[in-house]
Length: 546
Ligand SMILES: Cc1ncc(C[n+]2csc(CCOP(=O)(O)OP(=O)(O)O)c2C)c(N)n1
Ligand SMILES: [Mg+2]
Image (cartoon, rainbow, N blue to C red):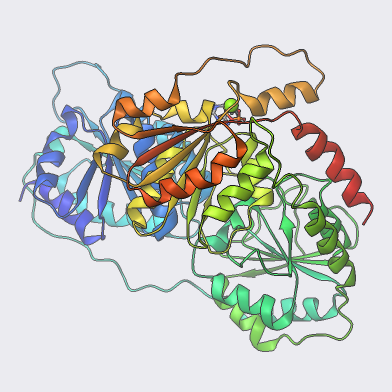
């Protein structure tokens, strides 16, 4: 059998549905093998877009997303996506080509040591040096990528190896279960929660990876323990519940931080240190239980006293079996925080000003979206407003990157979300800066005949950095730019362009776009002028009063 055929068969056996990418001449054997395979090739216009799509496929399905590029320049274009995947804990395999390794007449043309380049940003990186190694190396790559904590892996398949004759053997996946927490550690956790006066549940990224939602919802509903979320933990438990006390979007000075400061025990489920810290441990008497697949990485601001390591859903189930509501639990202060927060949250939701007020935008998107609708955020100021004000109701319905926090992933991640969930509405929410970093994928979306909506929040600037610049009392410099006419821009790709000219127009327009199958882009001028005053001053003052 030809090695490239075996390679593709191995991918099929792993359940691969899509490969995102751009082939080069070094991948042509693999491409030919793919032509007759059940795997669908999603050809993109930049390898970075392909990498973000594969990562998001992995994030949403728990299965390994796969992307493909050529050697040298194709592989370097995958680097940011690899870092995104690795920090964000998403299972993803990158396949790159290479010049022949046994005999080559081309010197070092386009040749980089891609395997070594990928080393610091992957869990596993290897060159396939013989066709006979394909079966074991593909299996190992998938095993490593999807094992907790999931991440990026890389295989380099050189041109001459892809063309070898090999024996047609494959290695199937083993029947393996994730380890569960040991009974004594469950008892430690239960004792600690029972002893606490004001325990608070914190839900982070790892709780969004697997099906922990059911068990955590039971913990909240049956034991009435209030909860807060990190940005990547949004939606695991429905944030419209009364027991939800907020998202840890800001570093401090928000209502949620009053609740965290008051809690004498934080039950931290699934947060790890790649996300901006949702709270800072100090040497006070606050206790922390770390419940996760992996042990805590100790950090000056994070050193939990008890750890429950193992499958999260199983750990929560075991805790639920033993834990009883305690009469001495006192959540009355949390109720006050909740009341004050709910009073502040509607601020700006009906504000008619134009350009649009960010709070109005968040509120309108929430009104338009059903519970299972998916929003995919790029990186910019608006991410803060969405993370803080948009209440997620289902797991993985708010896809944002609070780990690498790269710009450019909004549109590709929305496209992958639509492939995985064709029946759900999907909206990409991008700044004018982040959108332009991968806007070429509009052509891919149009070619795939996708129904997605892209909101471009236009301030003609790298707004987030402008805000920080002003905050540091520097003079404005170096962060403003011009933009193409976004309506004409998307129409040039064959999509539909819309421009918002008043605040009232926005919600009906989003609703209309949700009805009409097309690649829609909505150009939305946005008013960031009060960000600093609200996020840094007003909230601080209001929350301090609780
Ligand atoms: C790839 C990348 N480059 C630079 C940054 C630093 N950065 C963070 S936000 C931001 C500005 C984002 O501008 P835009 O997308 O227009 O969103 P806005 O804040 O204006 O709404 C920059 C430059 C980054 N996070 N990622
Ligand atoms: Mg901008």
